[in-house]
Each structure stands twice: as C-alpha cells, then as structure tokens.
Image 1 (spheres, rainbow, N blue to C red):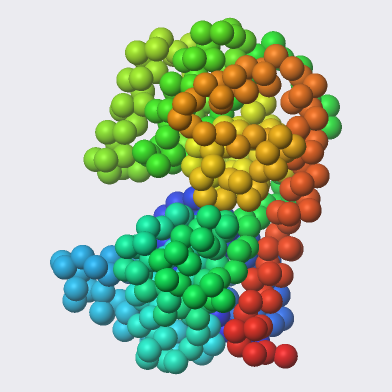
Image 2 (tube, rainbow, N blue to C red):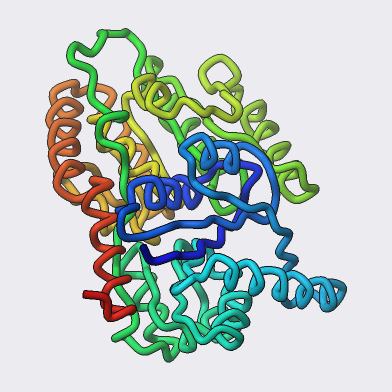
Length: 364
C-alpha cells in the first residue's frame, strides 16, 4: 500500500471542504492507498473520520505568516514532518491552500511530492504568496479557479479540474413530493460575508412583495468570532427591517443535510460550493451566481440558472417563476438529478484523484 498524508483545514466542524475530504479518504481504494488525516483541532470532523476507521491525528498548525506564530509554526512543521516520516508517506495532499507552506516544508525535508486542493477563488497575490508553482500537482474545483492560477503564473500542466462530489444514495429525490401551499427557498452555509446572506434577505424582501406563498430559510450558523457575530447580527437586523420575521426562518447549524434538501423547493447559492451537488442530487433546482464552481456544476437553463447577483432582479424574477410554475420545478429538478448522477458521483471523483496519484508517483 502507498501511505498518503492528508492535511485538513479543520477538525472541529464539517464544512464543504471537510465533506469532500471525507468522501475521498473513506472511498479511496484502501488496498492500494493508506490514508492518514491530520486535523488542526479536535471535534466533529475528527469523530466522523474515526467513525469510518480513518486514522486521524490532531496536530495544531498555526498560520504560517503570522509573526506571533513564527516559533510555533516551525515546531508544528517539524512534528508534521516526523509524523509523515513515521507514516512512511509517499505523498502529501492538503485540502486547503493556506496549508501550502507546511507541504513545502515536508517536501523539502522528505523529498516527496505534494498536492494542493484549491477550493476558493484566489487573487494573484494569494497564488504567489502560497507558492503554488512549487506544488507538484494542483486540484482546482472549477475552471475559474484554474484560470486564476494560470494568470498568476502557475504552470497549467500541473493543474487538474476535479468537481466536487456527493453521496448519490444519501441525497435522493422524494418519490412522491408532498404538495404544499408554501414554496420554500433556502440558502445554505456558514453565516459570513462571503456567503452573502444579507443579499439573500434583500432578495427575499423583493420576492415577498410580489408573492405571499414563498418562505425562506437561512441554514447555517456563524463562527464565534467578532467578525462573524457582527455579520450575523446585521443579517438578523435586516430581516427585522423588512419585516420578514414571519416568513424567513434561521435554522441554525444542521448536520442532516439530506433532510434539509427535502425541506426545500429551491436552493439559492451566492457563493458556490458542494451544496449545489447536494441539491441537484436531491432533485432540487438551483439558482447560483457566476462565481467559483457554479458555472461548472449548473447547466444554465437545464439543471438550474446562473445569474448575476447585481442587479438582483433576475434572481428575484426567477424565484417568482419557480414559485408559480410547479411544472418548471419538476422538470428542472429531474434534469438536475440526472446530471448529478453523471457528473458528481463519489466514485467518479475518487477515481480522478487516484489517477492523479498514480501519474505523480509513476505507480503501475
């Protein structure tokens, strides 16, 4: 077997990146590969991995560029290198690009190849800051991410696009959807500026002014930091400003995403992410904005719609169209499920990554 060391961005919670890493390490061919996951903190993601018998180690990995963590980061890098050596790792794969400096430290010490997984859009400064051109391979989750890397000077030959995946068995359409007088539109993700929940509230206000049957859900919670708490407070204040308290519901953090998807009629995402694959697998239409992997995952006009956030009228009008045309909902939802089966299976995702491993290691 080939031992592989994985570096996770988080161990205490499960976001989109953690879901994708879990799909990979729990479905990889364990007759050929031996995974070991390193998480910077303990919690539900660590428990999740260990539940599936994936060897997992908790090791603090302080931010590389902060002056106050100068000594701590080198100690952590040394511990990580010792762990990789003890595991006899032949490859290191990080699920978050801010961990790239740790990869390069291990690469220099042990002379083994490294892979960085790009899950967000990066600026030219960030691409250079995290030294992507020194990576042996890079996985981008969208064409837009790949283009940004190339424009910043990264060798295009190092980059592979691998779309996010979803458990097609867990996320399935209802055989007989229950008819309701209400139409439920949701946005899913951590409550933070990048997810644009404030814009979602603005959209909800416009829709509510034209259609009384639509209900809205903000699914997710804010991190316990000043910035995130402030943003959540602003979102809630906006709900009160538009007097949407009776039709817009904050669910908090949910861990039962297959059930969440069944509770929605339509998903709106203003920041891309693996929720698109989950919604499509559940047979739900998706409206997204042209950012990140959205355009790679949604077939515009077939499995959902890709529309600009500014101005928001196009999104408002499309929600109103979905809410008043059940046939459109059913047709787009069915096409979304079929597309998910072809493009987002875990097996397809894992095989693409394994093919990359084999090429990188010249393993026959």
